[in-house]
Structure formats: C-alpha cells, structure tokens
Image 1 (cartoon, helix red, strand yellow):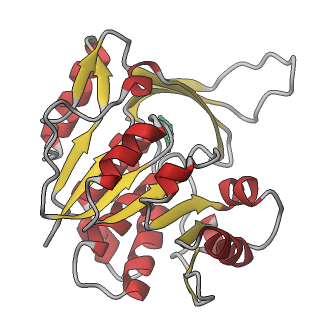
Image 2 (image 1 turned 90 degrees about the vertical axis):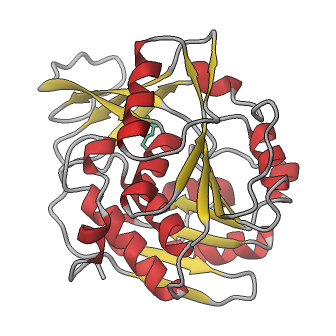
Length: 295
Ligand code: RIB
C-alpha cells in the first residue's frame, strides 16, 4: 500500500457555540467556547491516518505553544511530521461560529501557514500513492511539490474556494470541493452533479463535488459520473466533515478499492464526522467507517 503525503495547514480552532449566527452589526452571547486542533491540512492528515493510511505531512507552524500542541497531535496519530517547518510567524488560527443546526462560519488567520514552502533538501518519496493539498497554504509551494510527484494521484481540495493557479492545475489530477465552493469556481448555481460535470469538462480533471446529506458526485472529463449517498446521522457539528471525506478518500484510494466503494466509504466518513463537536475529535476511525452503514 502506497503512502499519503498531505501538504497543508494547521490551525488552532476556537469554536463559539451560538443559537444562531449574528446579523451584521448585531452582538450575541455565545452558549460556549472551546478550542480544538484544526486546519484543513492537519485535519485531513489525521483523517487519513485514522482510516489507517500511512501519512506524512508537510506544514509550517510557529515557535509557540500551538505549534508544540500540533506536534503532539501528529505524534499521537502516527503521522510522520519530519518535514514540518517552524517559522517566526505565529501558528495559524481559526475562529469558528457554530449554530444550533451544526452549520458553521469560519475565519482563518493564516500565520505560519502563509509561509509554507518546499522543505529544504526535499527529496520526493517514490512510494506516495496520493498527494493531497488544500488552499490554506501557498499554491506555488503545492505546485512545486505536486510537480515532484508525477507518479502519485495528486488531489487538490479547492478549499477555501479561490481561483487555481494554472501551474498548480497543470500538475493536479483531481479536484475535490463542496457544492458552495463548486458554485464559486463555476461562477453559477446548479445541482452538484451538474457542477462536477461542468468543472470536469472545463478543467479536464476528475472532479468530486460533495453535497452534505445529498452525498458526493465524482465526474470525469468524458462525462461519466458516479455518486454515493451517506448514511443518515444526527448532525452536531459539520466542521471537519469535508476533511474526514478527503482523508478517508485518500486512504482508501491508496488501497485496492473500486472508485465506487472508495467514494461510499469517504461519504460515510464525512457523515460520521458530523456527529461530534470539533474538527479532530469528530474524525472517524477505520472500523467505524467500515461498519455497516459506513461500508
Ligand atoms: O475544514 C475545517 C477547518 O477549516 C477548521 O479546522 C479550520 O481550522 C479551517 O481550516
């Protein structure tokens, strides 16, 4: 089984639990506050490791308590963090507003994430089946790393939504994004399957659009679409659901599963992640993903 290389962010998440989101200019009282490990890159690395992938991470943190906590997390999760770099900037942070329906609004403060670069002396490993990145770290560094891994399946999670640099798209095999991000990228509203097909035709890449309880739609540039529906769950917090999907998708892609089954397992992982609060505490383990309803 090939390994998984995740290139991406670490954030310390501060979550404010609210009855509802504030209107512009309005002041609300929170129901509670909590801190969790977060950052799309680190979350996806943890999700892949919990699905029993062999995971290495390239990230950048600050020389501070959050950075030390991040290293402790990666060690506990069995993630190879040797290529993680430390800079003068503070470790990334995020403030997350969470409403009673489990929906969120996220503001990130990039800090050290904005300084992610190709690690000095980086030698591309030859046994990487999947390379996975997001848009919370500089696209130029991801492009350079993806370019060095032509034998891997290079997956770009287009989150947060932003235009993709041509040099990054040129070395990307697959795009994964949620329906909101897909509508931003496609510059129009449409059903998730239609957005996946349109983006696949436009970029000539495989595209997966995730759509919460409606599941996920995997389109190829030749017009073939496969889809998967998640098990029903009671939603506590959707934070990290996309990261659970990506991490599980990477881990099961690195094994000999069919595309249909890989997609089914990934949507199950995403659904399971909605049942608990916080990004990292909610990321499911392999056994839960493979359990009936998951598989
Ligand atoms: O995908 C969820 C993550 O987005 C949070 O953990 C937050 O840090 C932001 O990066």
